[in-house]
Length: 80
Image 1 (cartoon, rainbow, N blue to C red):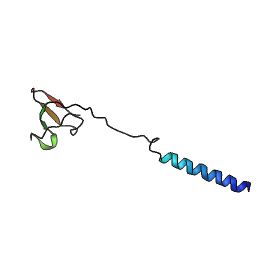
Image 2: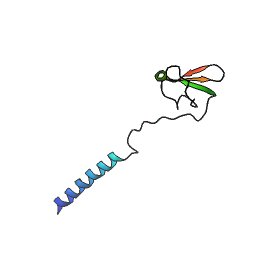
Image 3: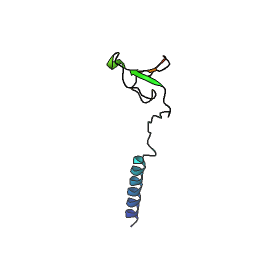
Image 4: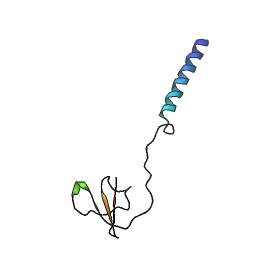
């Protein structure tokens, strides 16, 4: 009887350890937080398309890495 209780406790402990390991709350999650503002962007250029003027994105968080946002006031923002 004591042996079956011990086996049940060990099994219960192992199941609990597995469930805790699969809990998404304990896992490390990598997330990107994008600011909720939109720059006055005329167009966007990216190295992969050369000098082609692409449709603008609101900010660097929403555009691909390495692209440049060309603003309406003549300045530009490089997205890295």
